[in-house]
Length: 434
Image 1 (tube, rainbow, N blue to C red):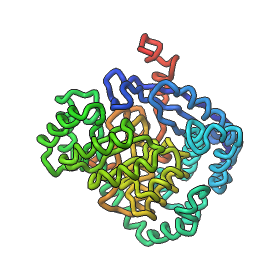
Image 2 (image 1 turned 30 degrees about the vertical axis):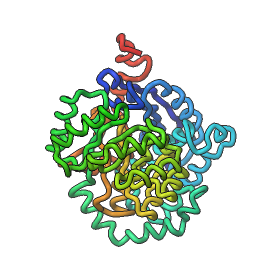
Image 3 (image 1 turned 90 degrees about the vertical axis):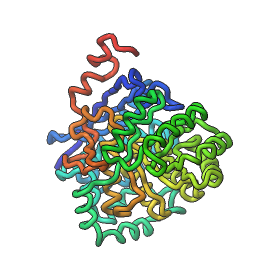
């Protein structure tokens, strides 16, 4: 018997704004940060997770995490696994806290931190990486982890079970393919808006040489500048190499349609986040009026309910789940299964500290247990801050290779936490900007 005995949290902030890493039309100076949770047990294993933020406000996320983490202290680990679906509902059902959402915002992300930490414990306790732990679960166990409230008109438990059962006979073959070749990655590393043309083109050439199958670039600050940058990129990579653009929600609907259509000659793989993430009808109209340019979104979709509507309204051609925006593994399982029902590929977002390490597990479970290996899936990779994790995401020939350490991937080195914890870590104490 293993019991959760306590929790602790850390406000970890990295100074990425000093190099304009992560800069885009909406977020000019992000400091990649982690609201980091650790659940401690009575047998020395810990459950580690994080919510990604971009600096100020991390303390608010930490406060929400601390409140919800107390709800799982004292739980037996085996009982928690058996009842993980009920625990997920309970974390989202405290009426006084729910008033601040519901199913969105800092408390929803805090619920995700707690749930992800529990899944980290489950898989560590079994001695498996999370992708393998999920892949070995029975379809009924997976379905039992899902909260079908508000999505049963799009996906019910019987449909979810049928989708999972369809792939059961292929799981062994799918896992062998995963182990041998991984899942395809794309990179945003060359595309930050604050980079010079020279740096952008140098990094783009390196990405192509390293085998990435798609490169994504930020856009939306100036149409003239977007056209200039995309012209240079096309001159470098040719007319057919896949490139995508990401507006990070900077446009309203009419502006998005006009702007995207003005860039159609560049043969874009997709336009990402063209408007506000909650504007489902706006996304649907954009999707209709910028065809054939596909629309992708989801990194800031607050819950399965938004994803349900995006799918039902045919507003997206690509679903981009995030490891820490929604309520953890449980909700992302639901998102992946909804996408499978609607025939939309899931191409996870991973632009932030720890997100590559975390979301790869969901993509790999999808490749083994849900939709298998197919040409539509590609997982974002950003080459920042991986050295702070016990098992950095491994890219080989443009593919994510499956992690081998037990757990869900968010484990940071304690030395990194100690150095960058805000405001008393060594980095921030030594005269760093605030």
